[in-house]
Image (cartoon, rainbow over the protein chains, first blue to last red):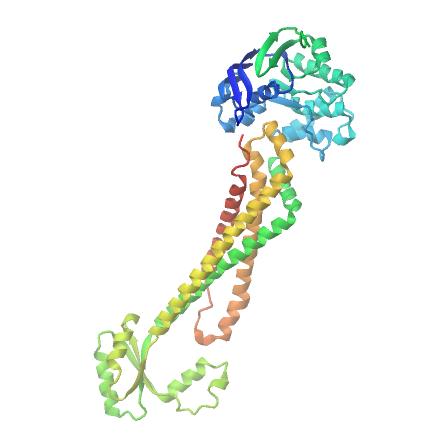
Length: 228
Length: 293
């Protein structure tokens, strides 16, 4: 589903973010990418949506070499890769329903599909009663659920989550992790960057650890870190 | 669904920065109005030239004391020239009657004049207007001839003034059109800036670039089209209100202010096409560097 080979990423000014990263992730896996700030986690995730391009090496997503993907095809790649962020990125002037519907409308889904799928997905994330609320009327955890609903409403093959619990308290985080786990059980590949020890240790899933831009550990059913 | 989306987005953009849109629309309208002015000026001059060229004749003014014999010799001499089509003798009385007819709306021009104040003349109609100067030189100074006049000089002047006016107006309208395109581009940039969060999410969830661009392009086209329609409306009303009245008020100029419907439609078409072009250029300027993935 995802494969990177010998990927190097250097930003302008010679700042190195990834060094020789080779990772393979199978369909349906749940993978934690862990490591301290600046270790290259976010850069790795951005490669998967072609938000960034590697300086060297190759990135394959859903069987496609992203380097040879023309820029007009990139939107179609992104329809297969849902994204969730630490800061939710919801539109404050749209309701919960409209925020999720927006993701379907802008890729040209017909109105009846939008009207059917949006309430369904909001029911799934536990917000079936709050369709008409605005984001600032919701708690942080609820906002993140809206954001997950938006990322998942189009049933992408891959869900990428960059520190989805970074702004949430531990109890709320557990709820979000349950939701991501449920999504993973539908067959969706989930790649999640985090530095939340408790979550990683309790989930016991595959852990890829980055340190100083390199993969230092790749362990199935791993924990956050041995030494930390 | 999709069209509804595009139009509601466009309408929102227009409403959100109304002032910039108004500025862009009026610049488009003013610059297109100048362009339309150039076209109409061209049409007026064309009419004038046609009018004059049809009327170009060498007027040979006769001395009041010309003898019958001198007149006959002159007439046969003129008829022999191969550049001459035909000649007409205009007596003093006929000349005055024509003058009265030409200035019938301004009787003060002729009321106080005696009936024989205008000279008799031979009107020499040529096979081509370009022979006027040669024929005139030939006849000047012949016995019984007081003066020889022809319309050539006026036509030449007219064409010079026209080309100067056209160049100046054209340059001004081009400068204004560039300004209009820049204003449209700026309007769109503001609209993009106001919606940068939405655009970010649209890209994130895989909206195609064209899908994101279209509402902004429509906004640019809308501003340009409204500007074009305003200038077209002004041209139309100028035609029906101003020019027809001017034609009636200044009949001695001939039919210089009457344009065919086809000509007017052609001017309107030019305005709309150029306006839409300006809108597209402005939109493209604003969107060129935008949305690169």
